Image 1 (cartoon, protein in one colour):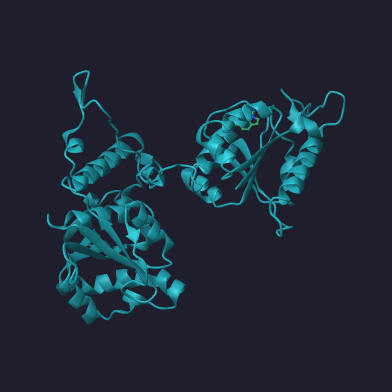
Image 2: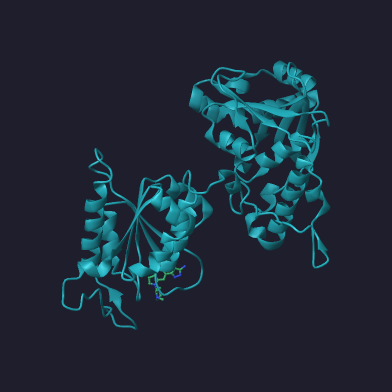
Amino acid sequence: MRLDVVSIFPDYLAPLDLSLIGKARRDGLLDLTVHDLRDFAHDRHRTVDDTPYGGGAGMVMKPQPWSEALDHVVAQGSSAFPGAAERVPTLIVPGPGGEPFTQQIAKDLAEEPWLAFACGRYEGIDERVYEWAGERMPVRILSLGDYVLNGGEVAVLAMVEAIARLLPGVIGNAESLIEESHEDGLLEYPVYTKPAEWDGRAVPEVLLGGNHRAIAEWRHEQRVQRTAARRPDLLPPVAAAAALADLEERVATPADAPDLQVLTRACWAPEFARYGMFGAGEEDLETVRDGIQEWDTRVWRRDGTLIASVRVRPHPTREATWQIGRLMVAPYLQGRGLGRELLAYAESLAPEDIRTFWLNTGAKSTENLRMYRKAGYRVRPGEGEFPGTVDLTKRLVSAGD
Ligand code: JD8
């Protein structure tokens, strides 16, 4: 990824030479250049600001130095993209009135090949610069938070770190990105290290027992509780059932078949778009009923409406393997962490002797694959159980392993 930053205080960005971001730059994972806006002000005092039209306190940043600086950034940067002559950066302009910067925006921007950041100062940048830039490249005005800073540099430091740490290879153990706050709408769980007893305070027993499933369940519960306590705004109101516990769960019966058929078709619709085939969504009612008999199928309802379902069984042909299937959340409630909860719950239903979890999903089902990978599953080589699918497994490491 290429990053350009323009500021009248280029030394403010020096912290980006340090730590993991500094190492990523030295390892060529990140190509970051800082430009001094005053290099594009040609009067004796290299003036970049002037008094505001209409009066008022403070100064405003002049348009000309900005247009020259951004022209230079585009001209200099496009050489980093041979063969993509028309390539321009996405311009990020931090501002207190901007769209709130979030983890999701960090993830979106981490997919971009080239970002440029314009650090304003004083009362801000002449508004015509935004229009001028918008005619040449995508422009996003982002705010770090609802408080006032003196300029954009601090915001750029935070945004560059939040974005760059998501780039492959920047964070040594990508695993640790998984259960972070804001990653899936839940805050992080409490962490502990040696000694097990400190200042008469003990580490929670479950963390010392080596039972990884129990640890995973405890940590998830801690995350839900902390989020409910500190950031209830992250737990979508009624709709959610931020937790399965908010819904009525029971083992499915043939009477659930019609609703299950509807939920399956709704959840498989995107697969139809991807593969031109409906997969499970093509099952007729009889087949759905058979599935309810052959699997331990669980359904979650709220006020009678089927919200979610998952089914589990011992894998028919593989030793000590727990097969998880048809993990479904009503489309309008997807993306809020319920799927991860369903998966954790399906895993918790496994008998003690189980050593491997097994599931199957579409080879191009990026969101599903992202969730399963985050939950520790690995894609098995080769085609999965059905055409266009892949099988994924997660091995349980017990205390004895
Ligand atoms: C860019 C100039 C200062 C802002 C008059 C104080 C972001 N979350 C945030 N708070 N403040 C900023 C921010 C402040 C900036 C500039 C970002 C450029 N200022 C101005 C308007 C009021 N002074 C920010 N992201």
